[in-house]
Image (cartoon, rainbow, N blue to C red):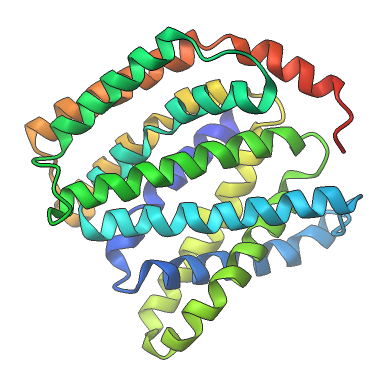
Length: 291
């Protein structure tokens, strides 16, 4: 739980870099993942760990997760850039609902009527956050991209859970960041000339502290913490992010946004507390020799 809380705090701070860095979102994520993967690659031998996965199937799984990670972070930063830190974090906070729906699909079980109900309430909360649902509106666009970021993060969390006890968390984080940087490299290279010394320093802080370290801590926590519990704790991420955005960026959320965000965070917390089928599904997955 300590690892989980540390990672959530750092993830909340990471959202601010979408405003600090005046760069395209895919360039920010490329720099973040490239620096993180290099840092992790240097760290792994120091810990006496094997870099190479034990099977091709695990390697393929890590590659897929790396692609999902790239999509998640690009959409997350783009959401913040087109709107505000608060909007990006609040819409991203819908990810526990996606965990609730995706867990039965990946591990077995049924989608309950309760899941449908809370999804409707989440949608009502998003209606309050958005002043109008028009693509021309920056807040609406931020919500759409932030929700997509939440969907991909939910999928990534569940896939991480499946191999968190088979591969060292730091090795998982290394391969995911490496693949993400490789995927984004073709889009980022032509913009490298736009990097200033200040941007490089900020990317280094983001890559090492808020990515390599935070990502490893988050995956490490999944060795003993269920995704639903992780979802509950992750509800603190927008709280941290909004507080720091107010301090450093002077971004104060409106009353309507706070009410909508409060509904979303409350219902995701309720959904995570009510989620029980994953216990049975997780035990089933542990009995399967998938790798």
